[in-house]
Length: 117
Image (cartoon, rainbow, N blue to C red; front, side, top):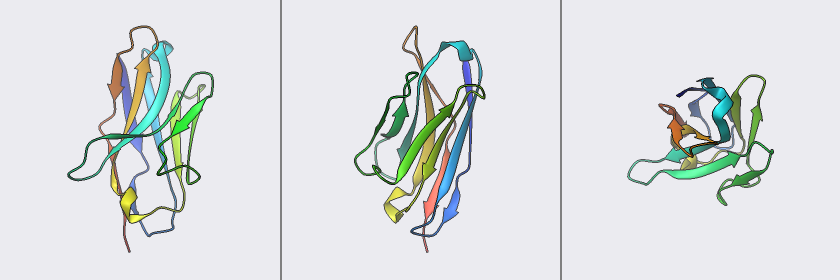
C-alpha cells in the first residue's frame, strides 16, 4: 500500500503560479511512475503530467511549456510547478503513482486549484 498526501493548492490570479507537492509513504519501494491528474467540474479526470523512474516526462498538450513535473526520490515526493495559470486550469488536482510490479494505481485525495481574478 502507498499513501499519498497532496498540498499546495489554492486560489491564484490568472498568470500566477502555484507549486503542488505530493508526498508518498508506505510501500515506496514499489513506486514506478508518478503523476498528476485533474478533474474540472462536469468533466472527466485527465492526465496533466507524468514522470517515470527514468526521469522521462510527458505532459498534456494544454499545459506544455507552462507546467513542469519533477520528483525527489530521496523524499518520495513529486512536484508540479504551474506557471502562467489560466482560468481553465481550475480543477481538483490528484496525485497518482503506479506500482511498478503490479501496475496498481494509488491516488491522493486531491487538492483544489482555482484560477480566478
